Amino acid sequence: MKPQLKPNCPNFSSGPCAKRPGYALSQLNIDALGRSHRSKIGKAQLGEAIQLTEQLLELPEGYRVGIVPGSDTGAMEMVMWSLLGPKPLDIFSWESFGKGWFTDVSKQLKLEQVNHYSSDYGQLPDMNQANPDNDCIFTWNGTTSGVAVPNGDWISSQRSGLTICDATSAVFAMPMPWEKLDVVTYSWQKALGGEGAHGVIILSPRAVARLESHQPSWPMPKVFRLTQGGKLIEGIFKGETINTPSMLCVADYIDALKWVQSLGGVSASISKSQQNLEVIKQFVADNAWISFLAKQPETLSNTSVCLTLDASAEQVKTIIGLLDQEQVAFDIGAYRDAPAGLRIWCGATVEKEDLERFMPWLAWAYKQVCL
Image (cartoon, rainbow, N blue to C red; front, side):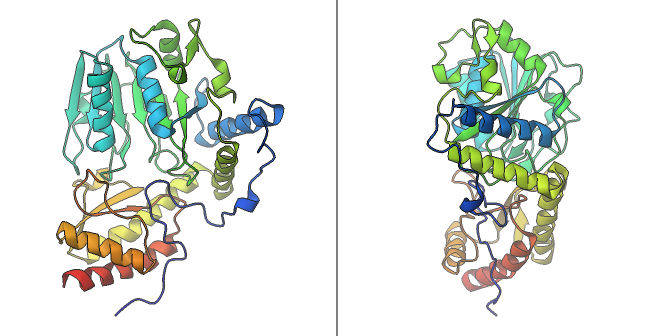
């Protein structure tokens, strides 16, 4: 029978993701709107966003946080253009974004010493192939495949190369071994449900040392420059952004950070995301017609949960349209380059009750279309 209860919030998109429970524009501190981002109040708000990030993520001493343009993509491009070149590079990819980073380093930067370790959607390459003497690029969580690295045990503590991690759908939702990560990028429109267009870069002291000792052989666009005169541009990590940020987006980010703080910190947001995943795991266990795209349970993402159905691509499309029409689930289609299926965001801004209400609707829609 057709279910009666609907999710209170049917926003299960994997980016931009659902706003936090209880979110309201009227709750944002908009004192900096209409003011220069370089004014005292503007820099104070940007500084607050950076300070809260450092505190909540419990970053090691000496790590720096900067707000940059272009979302996670801009942050990753900035890092690759600024840091790569001195060492051979190991790059791991198992979904579209990781493959995109490989395209950039091989065809745009034209690096010659690149080892590409890749696997198909649903699989994780052997991360133990990483050479500690090389630089390394990888995504912690494959947003378009639902496959995540289970831990950082494969990263050497005695490495001489830099580890560069795209963590946009992992940070604030999965434990991160910060001491093993030299560069981390993310955008707050993922796990925090913030507004898009801005990225965050986190640099270890080793990454800063590379920036200050390495001069890239290619021209550097102004928007990518992290150093000036051979020294780190410290202002970027104190709230003096490279280009003009949206202060409304910054206020929105601060609101999300304070919400995580109110939960009890990042450990609480991680737990909330893991509990959300359990709802879908139980549903998959109870229904033979649906499966996780991730082949190994230990690599299963607890944020961008990707699913395959015993259905044709056209039937999957019809199911997604039916759920959208019933206003019980929006924007849950698989990424365009991924196998046909569903992608359901389970980060902390999604309520467990909404997933519990959505699952019967998914079963109903499948039966309407496929049985």
